[in-house]
Image (cartoon, rainbow, N blue to C red; front, side):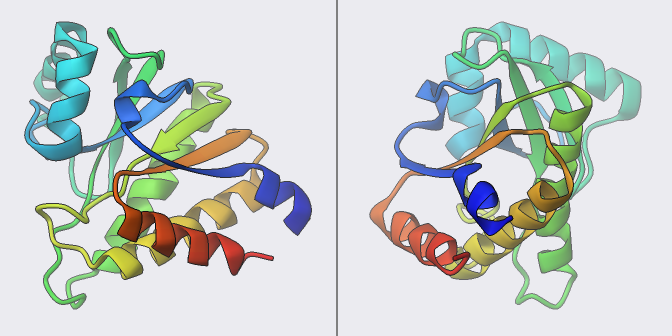
Amino acid sequence: MPDTLAHRLQLLQGDITKVQADALVNAANSSLLGGGGVDGAIHRAGGPAILEDCRKIVARQGGCNTGEAVITTGGNLPAKHVIHTVGPVWNGGHRREPELLANCYHNSLQLAQEHGIRTIAFPNISTGIYGYPKDKAANVAVQTVRAFLAQHQLPAQVIFVVFDAENLRLYEEQLTNLS
């Protein structure tokens, strides 16, 4: 099965808001109302429809907890959907950060599967202002996605979208270790 699994994983360096996928994952904050980094870029590129959907979710459930995920329209993005997940703030790794980060990936993939999403693109969750070490985050991301895909047919394709050369190298190392 490793051969088919490796074919379901892709790595791109660039702007996640330009990626052609059924769903983009947003590294959101718990308010779901936009912010900086990837979150701000997705909200700006996707337009007001995403924020409108987020406000409905907040009215219904009061935001999104760390490790959880919710789905909205993709608005003006090339993707039909945005899956918003809230990553953990790094506190040295002693406050369940790896488990919470793994939950971000698992719950996003679970939501994608429930909505029949075939292709999904992930940014580097929690590695910006939340301070999660990039190497540790890449390991959690690849291992969690790999484990999910080994058990599920959907999504058929997972794209890791990295912004910088350092993350590109870290993900290449993780993906090379799959073989």
